[in-house]
Every structure is written in C-alpha cells, then in structure tokens.
View: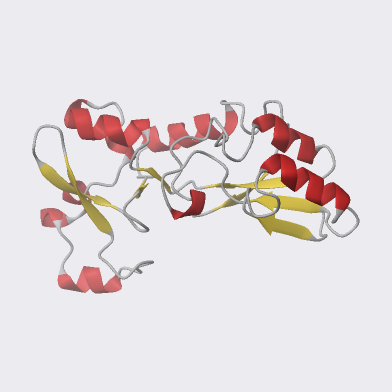
Length: 196
C-alpha cells in the first residue's frame, strides 16, 4: 500500500456488491484511486458488518473471495479485522452460552465476575470507564442452565468483547489472522486496519 488515494467503501455501497465495485473501480475510478479499503464483508449480525460471526467467508450477499481477489489484481486491498469483539451469534459465544464452564471458548470473553473485585466495578471505577455507547459496557446474558451473568460489551449488544488477557484469545486471533486463508490464501497478503 503506497501513500496514495485510498477509497474507503462498504462492500455494497458502489454498485451493490464486490463484483460491481470492481467494475466501478475499473470504469470510473481507475486513474483516481490507488487502493481500496473494503469495510466489513464477513457474515455479521449487526452494526453494518462490525459484528462478525466468522472471518473465514465473505457474506454471500456481497460476493466472494474470488471477487475480492479480482479487485486485488489491480488495487491493493485493505480490510477490517475487528480484533476486539465477535458477534454474540458466533459459534464461540453460542457454545459458551450453551455449555458455560464446559465450553472450550469460555476464556475468550470478559466476564464481570472474574474481572472486577466482587463482580462489579465501584462507582469510582465505573466513572473512569470510557464508554463508546450511552450504556454500561456489559450485556447480561442468559445461559442454557438458566443462570445469568454480565459479559463485557463495549459496543452494541451483538458485539461481545474478547479477553486479551487470556492465551486462548491470542491463539484464536493468530489462527484467524494467519491460518484460515483470509490473508495468505488465494488473496495473498492483505493490509489490515485494526479496530482496537
């Protein structure tokens, strides 16, 4: 990626899909735009793509990996990698809701009871939290066993934060980033913009 003009667009904003975005880039913007930053195109449940269910596929309503690969032939491509949270409907969080302490994914999430002394922040601690939304930074979730618990949620209710104090979370990010074909598969190496 060179220090030149970068188009930032949602996958469906210019032409309705990634294959049509390629046409717009070639026919209208070829000389004007060097690279393209395609905002989230992964399957997602909220916030215009910023609540990813998985990183191993492209939402079929936007197109395919092949469509992104076609754009990359002519333009460097940057993508969003929401490293700080996943959708509450991801297989990881759904397994956690179903199996709670028996879930292999339980350490991926920030649980209030484990994070705060006595399970809740003091009034002083709560006042010091930078909040992205006009609400407390948690969601109270219902587990399959009927119990309820607060988990950290900085953004919307569908965007459950990941706990980077845990080695399991770091391993998940490394595996997602390096091994599932998103960044080093058919597309080659893509530039990234973290949302941390």
